[in-house]
Structures are given as C-alpha cells and as structure tokens.
Length: 325
Image (cartoon, rainbow, N blue to C red; front, side, top):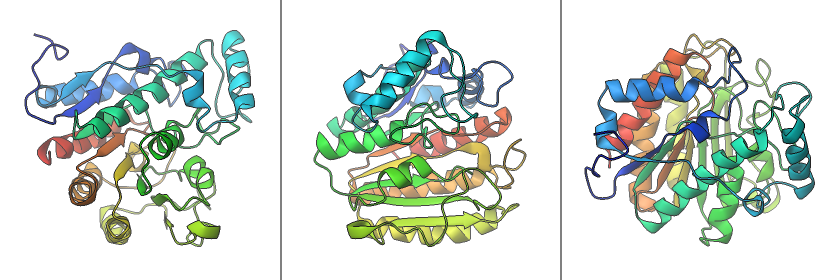
C-alpha cells in the first residue's frame, strides 16, 4: 500500500503535499534550489515513519486570478512571457527563468491555497508543504529564487474569501521575508514575526528591528535580526518574544515559514541552529493555533540548501505537527 492510498489515521489529520508538480519548481541540478529538495525531505519523513501518520495530498495548480490576488497583473504577464522562452533572469540575477516556470510557480501557489481551504473547512488541522513559502517575491517583481509569493497570495485569500482579520505570518528562515513584510507593511490584519540573520550580513539586507509596520499597522510587525553564528540558545531567547507577540494578537490562522537555511552548515547562510529550534517553534505555534485559530496552522518549507539539514528541520516540524494534533 502506498502513502497515497493509506487510510487517514485520525480525525482532523495533518495534510502533507508531495508530488512531481511541486518538484518542478526548481532551478536545475547543481543549483541551491534544485529539484532534489522535496525528495530529501520525503525520504527522511518516510524513514521516520511519518508518512503513516499524515494524509498525503497531490499538488494543485492556481489560476491567473489567484496569482493576481497579490501580484501586479503586469508582472504576471512578464512571468508568462519569460516562462515561454525560458531565457534570462526574472530579477537582477538571482532567479533564473526556465521554460515552464510560470506553470511550476502556479502549482506552488495553488497548493498553498488548497491547504488554506482544507484548513478553513476543517478537513485537516495542520498542513505542511515542503516546496512553498516563497517569501521574497514582491507584488511586481521576482526576487531571491522566488518567482511568486505564495504566502502573500494566501494572506490575500484568507482576508478576502474567508473574512479573517487577524492572520499571523511567522518566519524562521535565515533570510528576511521581505516580500511578505513590505507587501503588508501597512496592513494591520497581518501580524508579522520574523527571526532572521541580520541584513547587514545576508540577503536581502532588510528586516531591521525598527521596522514595525506603518500607518494603522504600526506595531503589528516584529523583526528579530540575529547575529551570524547565532545558535539554539540565542534562537530560543528571541523566540520567547516572538511567541508572546503572536499569542497576544490572537490569530485566526497561522502561516509558518520554516526555512531550513538557518541550520548550521547551510552553504549560503551563517546561522547555527539545530533542528531542535524548528521543532520548538512548531510545537509552540501549534499551541497558539489551538488557543486562538481552531488549530489552523500551515507550515511551508521555505529555504534550506544543505539537503541533510532541510530533511532534519522539516521532519522535525512535521513530527511536532503530528504529535500536537
């Protein structure tokens, strides 16, 4: 019996999205964001027996109207055109175009939206998507390996279609989630908390502690820049503030970008966490989701370019989602 046909092990299960259409969002073998990232995670999850404790779902595509919930239609036109010929870069040099990049990105967005819908409908209590959490793309531009911003699309969907007014976005990727922050900097409905490597030392150079939101959203954002070589103890100290901030907001839905590039040994970052940091954050967010959001917690893999690290970090998150459901 395959994981696709295993019976749901419990009521309100954890949904995990696995499939070729997610694997396609990658920039070729040898690239840090290569096509083997999803498999590295899923092989470890199966080795640990987590596949038997979750409900495996197939990726789902999004329509153009879904993408333009967050993105400028003119940018989507450009993305479609560059996807057709597959040459050049979608940004200033970080995000290569390839033939089919639009279709691959649409599957990331559609899968994130499908998870949101299932969580809102009560079909599942938690969900995990390994190839998701593309947090750098701006409303009108690609950035940092992110052709689109599925997080931003999900937030717009939860606001407009589900009438939510308190949506928490929590990000522990080593890189600041700038596309989400600046996309909702003046939106008080989005409670934003981000623990990341200090932008003075790492792309994208943003996420300073004084950036707390603007206008009516002033104070609704929390940026926690960490020094290079910060370890688990420093993360846990910062996390206490994040947890109190998010809990006080009483979120109706939690989006958790759990990038694994904050673990020691990542080839392009300088933090030194272990997977225990990710497990702790996931467990504490589950508790907050249970108190305020009917359990609704969507975890997205985000970055992570050491394959062993991402396998350990993401399975640590998934293990906590299962244990706390």
